[in-house]
Image (cartoon, rainbow, N blue to C red; front, side, top):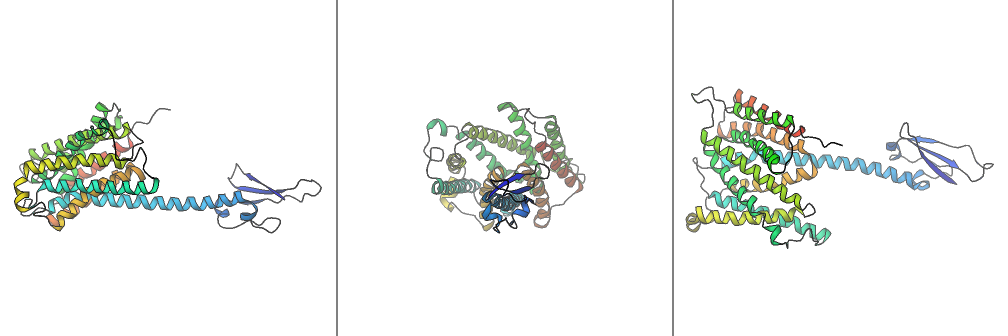
Amino acid sequence: MEYRRVKDQVNGSLRLTAAGPLDSLRRPPISVTETFDDLSQKDIESLGGRSLSSANPIAAAIAGLSSAGGAKGKSSWKLKSVVTLALTLLTSSQAILIVWSKRAGKYEYSVTTANFSVEALKCLLSLAALFRTWNRHGVTDDNRLTTSFDEVSVYPIPAVLYMVKNLLQYYIFAYVDAPAYQILKNLNIISTGVLYRIILKKKLSEIQWAAFVLLCAGCTTAQLNPSSDHVLQTPFQGWMMAIVMALLSGFAGVYTEAIIKKRPSRNINVQNFWLYIFGVLFNLVAICVQDYDAVMNKGFFHGYSFITVLMILNHALSGIAVSMVMKYADNIVKVYSTSVAMLLTAVVSVFLFGFHLSLAFFLGSTVVSVSVYLHSIGKLQPQK
């Protein structure tokens, strides 16, 4: 007996008909209609009493694919949820941990050693990911650590930019609090967008340009201080440091993306490893220049507390979380994490540091969240 499978183009169902080689011996055709979900749940009995899974391997395969597709969808949803939650918690706790690590308004540890520890931990995490890749797929030209001078010579520039930016984030808290920092660091969206246009020649849509203006308005609104003679809560020095950090972060990010996309087949962990190696070297120089005496007399980890260790882990894992978002989720996840992180930082700061959650801050953070969302959805679509 031979079975033919016909797909109904109207309702997307399967129709199974029995066909014999002789018309005189052909029995009346039997058609059974089932949806794909039904096929994955039960068998259709054939004329000979055998189930569809044994009589028609193709239909059985479709049933298996249907079940696998559902399981894969649930797994993907769970992974996105975990990544979103991780990035939100890491982003919101970043500024809080830096402020919390201070004692009597100052850092008892050397910020250069903390920055060095972050880069070293990132380097170790990249190596661990590479070992896992080597065990699974072996060593190839794209994932081996050995490289040429031309390839590795481009990493010092973004490494030194990231080092200066990361050191500045410790000193900016002399002028701003944790919630204000979460608001102001969104200025790097503007610097990144403008540098994309200048360096990578990528056009920005009108919506994105409008989002930049809205972002500036939101940051300013969040810093309004109606209860004081000063119009803005953040002093001029804090604004200048925030702008410098935004420029450094934007330029380093655009430059790093250009490096990565220059050789897209190269394993991302190899590229990160070399970037972090130069970060370690530059931070080692910063230790010798700024905190050499303190480290030699008091030790490398002098002044470290449990909060300091958590802060270092947070900074290292934040980079991993962003990479996972790029690979497993989408840009909306980053927008959601940024918006929720601003609110969480403000709420936690109320209890830990006595932060006053004003109407101006709430309205400003709302405007910033909307502008970030508009920037993410306002990308120019490629013309077909």
